[in-house]
Length: 402
Image (cartoon, one colour):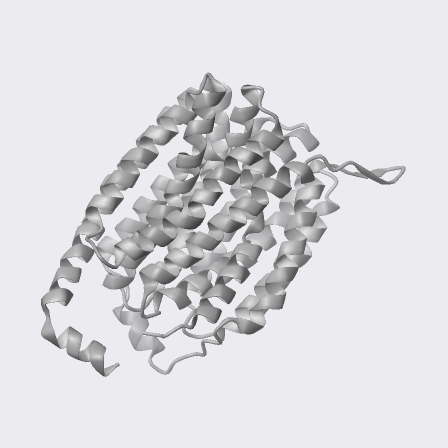
């Protein structure tokens, strides 16, 4: 176990959320791409799907390398690529050029996310540290919800044949965020390769851990199937982009506090009941959001829908870290989350085009519920191990020696 200082955890959080800015703004991205390039929901969703799939590929590739490569080198290389391709995305003149820019940016983001998660998973307080990371995601979400609706109004003419539109404004914001990430890399913990890394990798990874990762990916697939169209749902209710942004800011504000509470709770009580309650409310919020016919329903459902996944993750990752001390499975979680989510914009777009938001919402609710059910074997095993640790006197003696 690694004892990370508050400064190191804060630096990891800043690097991650600044590199992740484009992913946090996916709902605005799909809206901007649809309008700027005059695409259908399914066509715009296809671009987002490819970007998210590339993030998953980069994450899964580097999850196995967290013990072999110095973490700062990965952060510098990854943040630099994200910065460059975010800026290149501004100058993409068609959807094909934009796709070519988003894929390498996604691969680099996957590497950064895997390294950050692997570092946190090997810390001595993973639930609390993951709670802090997810809280920072909520704080970033507040900022993005305020900035991005205004960036979508970008209209700048640079010449007779080139004009910056709404989607270009988004990628300018994401490029600036990546630059901030590069500045804070210096304060991150420089985890170096370990001689024991091979032995650790052989130990890591139980079957129910991989099943749980598949399950969380299924839950996020369902969530993203409707969540990435949350801006378009608001537009259908005649809510302007600024007011949609304010609603998302409320959700993101809750997302600052709830992960911290969740991480604190995960260190003190068994995980089964909190996970069950949050998954149930997430299903209900999904159905309410997708079937909204009035603005008050949208305003009520969006903060709950947007916040609960970030509250689930600290407890989930803490349980996963308890069963896999190598940190490999926790480092891989972004790959599973985004592999599931990568198909969601395309499939969600098709479902919406076929049967409307309500049809896609019912599909999403089933996926979330099934994922939560498949998650439970790992949660129960982690709770059982927690009980064993609590009654094992040798655990306390070892903890005191540390």
